[in-house]
Image 1 (cartoon, rainbow, N blue to C red):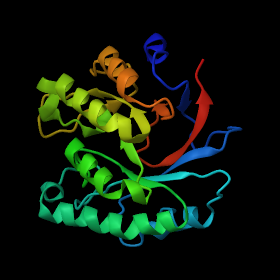
Image 2 (image 1 turned 180 degrees about the horizontal axis):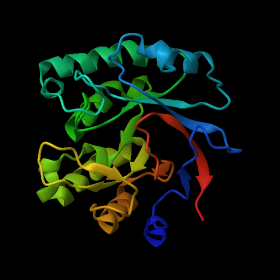
Image 3 (image 1 turned 180 degrees about the vertical axis):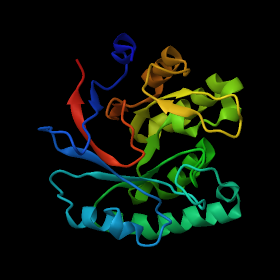
Image 4 (image 1 turned 45 degrees about the vertical axis):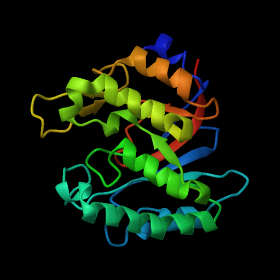
Length: 233
């Protein structure tokens, strides 16, 4: 990690505390584990319980991975990018967002290039359709990148930041290490230890990310977790 680089980011707070760590600050984001398309997901993975436990005095934004039609959460599935995937995404949002909104709880999906919500265009479309209904947009540049994008990594990252950052409720910063095989997902690693152009990303964030948007650095949320505000020294 490059502390000097991170110090230039627009928000002085980084949500880093996970559910198993002690912190005096309340959770701001609850990332639910699992595939929302699985039967019984809302009960088994905590969506229902989180809505029931919502405290309006300390509102928590609920987030989840947008899910996949494939057998495992982070395995590629071509149907996710076809009509079946678009219909599945629309169905999830139509089911989950009104329930969260009725409890005063913002809700959104973390995008991933293998999932139903897989690119900037999809994020922008969902934001335009649901921003007024409590939709929480997540800027997660690294998870939008496929190995096939390696050659034009700079351009893809810049587009993601410039388009999504102004609308984001949360920014997740991870790094990537690429494999030579285009059908293999880049390996997600700690920010500052991979191949993402860090100085450029920070420069774009300085321009596009609102001061009120928290930034989470170094959080592997593959299995969910809680994010809390922590001061950055």
